[in-house]
Length: 339
Ligand code: SAH
Image 1 (cartoon, protein in one colour):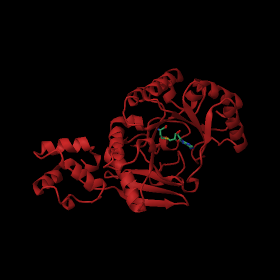
Image 2: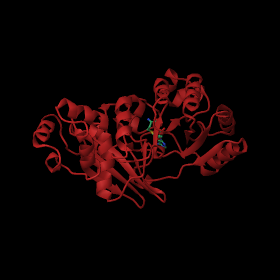
Image 3: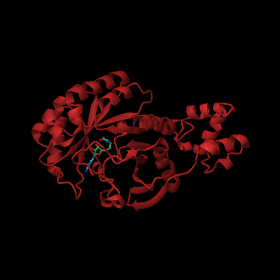
Image 4: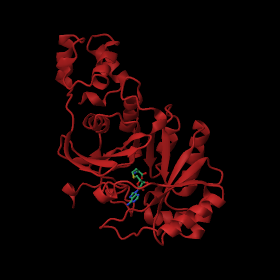
């Protein structure tokens, strides 16, 4: 087990179980996330016998960064995990701060037809520490703080729910990575039971839904998850989430040429979200060599945008990052492991 996977509460329990005092947990947390030491031996205010017990059960190893690809305001990091699997994280430099797109699984089982990441089936969930370390290690390499986190890399985060929740607790904790909940966003393709569970999670983390279609007919064709949780189940679950949390949702909508980008689609979409407190993020599709979908032409994206606006839907068009270095949305798929 790796120490970076423990929440503060879990470290408190650990100290109690080692016959020590709960308050030492805060010291350990501070060594990890404030002083950022890389060995247990440097934790000078924790007793030697406790340190050796910690060492027996926990490693403090980091991941290996095996490749870094840089562009002007974006950077992609390839990590090697202890079982030699690879994952990616992307750093984006905005005028409001640095944001990181983290991965939540090795591969993905959701099978969205347009998505490169899903071409490799899920191998396993990422452990909590493997998510935390994506941020911690990039901060170190960069020498700057990360202010925003989006869980939109490889994987379906709600298919790795328990580890995800622990990850949020660690990175949000003021003595952990201290990233404000409102600066954290998780994106799901629509796992209804987990959306409902998430509506009871106390941190005010942003929720984004990969919608990508205004009706079941189109959604069924591009997102297999829609067969399990069609819109008549997804939409009420989102309303429950909104009622409970009083928050605002983001809908992601990839513009796919000839598939979901017609004017009728725009009207139908406006109707679908009419009484939902949300905004829609239109995403220009990033074409990949292996998938036949084409990106909608910019004029048509603008037309779609205008229709939504006219129908009083809040809408933005996503700024594109990282196209040159294959770090764009849906392109995270390490060439190292190309099948
Ligand atoms: N599994 C989660 C999170 C990962 S994907 C989810 O489905 O939301 C993050 C976003 O990138 C999703 O909205 C996904 O649909 C989108 N995406 C996937 N492939 C893309 C591509 N080629 N171009 C643009 N966006 C893409």
